[in-house]
Image (cartoon, rainbow, N blue to C red; front, side, top):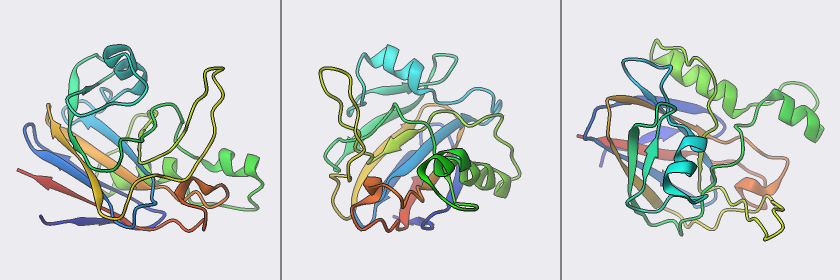
Length: 198
């Protein structure tokens, strides 16, 4: 498998033709990877967590589940997950305002900017920043609806594998969060990897 690096704290995007398989590898086991998919012929149609939750009637997809667009069409299907199955569909991509609220002084790398740059590198512009599928992100919830931000449970080289159901553009951000332990308690974001197999 020919792996492409998602550099630590940065983003990367690629074309994924219909029928191809998209592998996302948590190389060091503790890195959250914000994940987006856009329909190639019309970027205004994109993978939507709110539409997906209504379709699968759960908070986290499992193998066999289709992830839907904002037009309620399947765009990716989760085929395999060796990471422990802990992912997040609730939390928005981090941005400069999030880091300001956490107390960051000055500019801070963030997933919103990483998406924009990754798309720009392909000569594209995302029409907005959809709420991502936060792969490997551990956001437990309680019966009372309380959420918390916890380190990933995934292990080194664990992965997820999707099938593209439409010709699409997939984009990833190796989340640069280093102010809360969402990428592990050592607060050190790392690179991750992905591959598109035809």
